[in-house]
Length: 100
Image 1 (cartoon, rainbow, N blue to C red):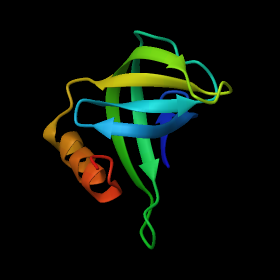
Image 2: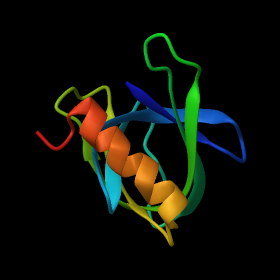
Image 3: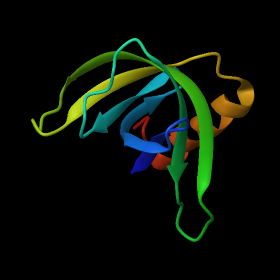
């Protein structure tokens, strides 16, 4: 799973379950405040490689209960993502098969 952390609090918010060039869907144990801007860090550890991170600014746009009622789904929209952010996101989508 791609883990997402709040950069300001260093709190794990949840895991990405869907990602595209404009944003992503996060599944979390706690509800996430809507219409809030976040500085986020996506962290993952590819096999036989060092930990990788991407820092992004995003706003929470929608939320609903997950299929599992113990979890919440939240949609985030990326804000002003420069090419140095979008390129790794596109590569991540390709490598991890989110576009399939």
